[in-house]
Image 1 (cartoon, rainbow, N blue to C red):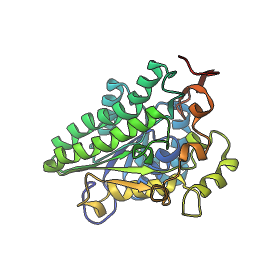
Image 2: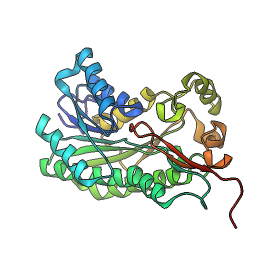
Image 3: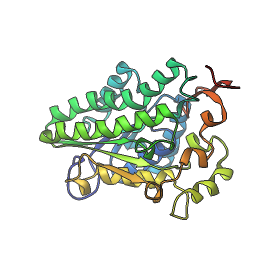
Image 4: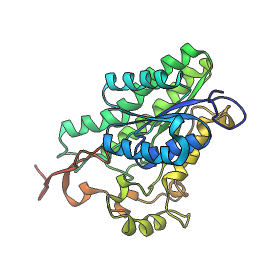
Length: 299
């Protein structure tokens, strides 16, 4: 069964989840396994991937899960991950473009161009490369498929994330719509989920307890967002239950986008607003960097 079948389950389908070893990706890998899919988790963080594989093997999913190294900003790495998925499980029916970083932050006048380029490389070039190489396989199979891109509510407005992050996520939403139109004749659906603040390592940065209540206060819904909430939405869009849904961007945000607060300021992730300049590498295993503090505006 492929990702477009109508029974709402993923038994027999094969999925590749980028950034699959942490946060939303990790929850998605487990959810798709529970739905019966064979899943390859691609991640740049080898140590986190090894932990995920051990956990899922202990949970009884060892025969239907694999882990591969993946740098989504590098085309050769993406092509290799797609090839490894097909080699391991014989096909590819679903791609989840999830890998992400917080990326460049700071005042626009101070952000280093290499940090800006790196951010868009991961967050926007990554989904493009995933689509490029996964769709080649799906079209050749001739049985359709599903792509789910992880965007963000930050792609809909200013102030809900750093500038490069927000711009990239806006690009992901538009790429989703464009790809959905192009690929519909091949029965390949392309959708996006747009999470609000979710309690993941990328957001709490080791301060999980302190962040939990703060996140819950941001949105109308009285509980903080968890990776599993997003994984459930991804699983729906990947499955046959969403067989007539394509080109959509689904908010998973506890009503946040309806209420419209300045999220970045509220959860104190707007480092640029307090004069810091650098780049947030998220859970890639690379240390995030505060390059400097801006004491005053340059002329």
